[in-house]
Image (cartoon, rainbow, N blue to C red):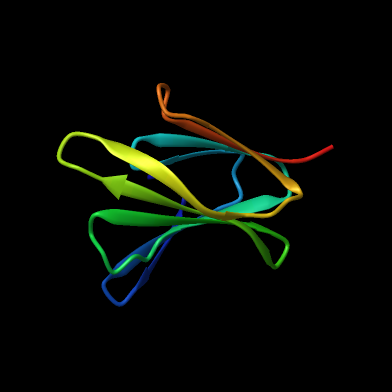
Length: 98
């Protein structure tokens, strides 16, 4: 993993300002000015993905893991954010609405 990782207790977090991030087989394309924090779920079958702009959380997603596959669920997203999810290619794009 070429991103900053933070280990708190037994939970591992990924913190990234990079425009391209890979988390559990999913690729996240993030516009400049956004940061991603992934991980921290107490449930080993889920990975929490939080997207921030400055100090404000603008989106929260959850990766659900199964034996041979995973999918993403949007829990919350700001009305100012454009979120595109392509399950076939396992990509998620985050950008600010124009």
